[in-house]
Length: 329
Image 1: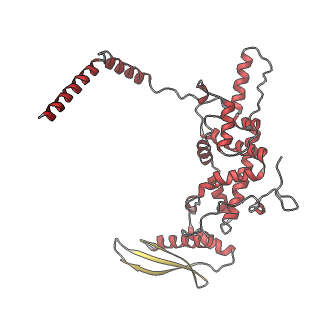
Image 2: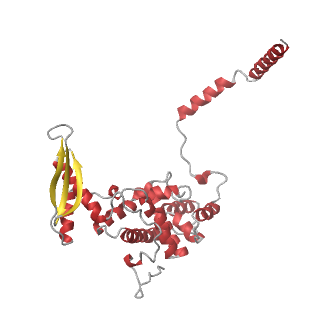
């Protein structure tokens, strides 16, 4: 009985304490919060503001931290130029002209030159990497993969995840994909000028070519007519014309029909495919043959992401007579 009496006393004390605590909240608090919320919803969402509008913004620290996050050694002036777009220069020029400064001095140039150089570097390094890592894939399909990896959307995706969005100096905000992609190209050129070709190639390999990791290459290949593509490939390589043959079928004339087709060349089986009709099976068999011939099977070895610039040097367009890659100035 003693224990129950003590417990009930403690519970009554806790209830009194809760009552006093609730009395500390004035009646006007809840209506005020509701009114503030109603006004906020009436005004609509707040406009997106750049990170530089915050009071703790330090652009020099952001530029320094960007290179350290990537573990790269950038020249601070060149990297700042890579983030400065022409629209920002024009905007600042108009602002200074409005206050009477006839010849404004901004101390930084825009990144148009870096963008042009970076675009060439990205295309060249990605193509050289693909030609080395996928030696059996024809050049026309190498070009398709390269275009997919260097598309504006893909470059913008990589650029945004590297943290460039808050550092870009441009007149407009928010930053669109075109600005993100062009900034990444300028960063590649800035890295080449700061650290040389080897570090620039490794940067492109890791952040752009690395998007191929655990991806099916056929996501980047558009093959409208696999059988015709196979016939053209065999003709170019001097192989016999591929011949589809029906290997087996089950459930003919039913909803669960399945056909197996094999494609032969000079009495050698190149690949097989299955489908609910012979037409579909022939198409799938042709795709399987292309995978076998291109070295892009589903069980293919992973792409070698340890290739260096010297490994891909034979596929670079600008090489010296000694066989070494020329240093771009």
